[in-house]
Length: 170
Image 1 (spheres, helix red, strand yellow):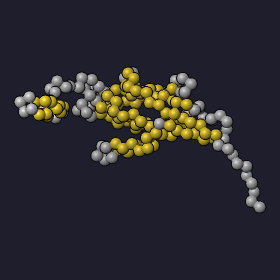
Image 2 (cartoon, one colour; image 1 turned 180 degrees about the vertical axis):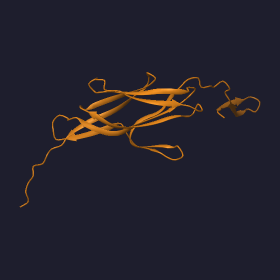
Image 3 (cartoon, helix red, strand yellow; image 1 turned 60 degrees about the vertical axis):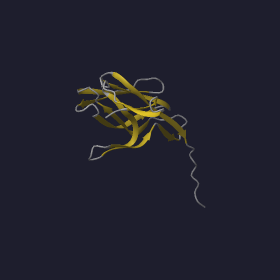
Image 4 (tube, helix red, strand yellow; image 1 turned 90 degrees about the horizontal axis):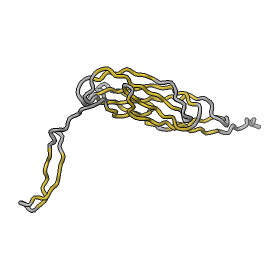
């Protein structure tokens, strides 16, 4: 049962008194709702249905010998957890990345189905091999049924490494 605890002054007892208020008019009227959206190394789904997100990241460092960053594949997982609310039935999650230069990249669409209680939902684990061509912040627009839920940033840093000349051992 959901309640709110309020402390108020009781004039009869001349002391503070704890009152519990049980709101009867609190109802969920919409949905689906975004619970979590993160990039991580691994998504574990245990036998009991519990989801564990391992090594959550929001930045990625790419190293290379060139002055300019070459196209690189970032391998990570995108985990999206949602709650149904009052929404029931099929829906489509769409993820659209945008490069640091503002170029919209190819979208990914994932069909999902919401069923059950208001607090139940869906958990999507999307393994990605994402091509990056420039350093900066890549924004991932996460939509459901063409309504934007959030934008998730992934910062890519480029680190030029110096190549040491090979010196033969004497």
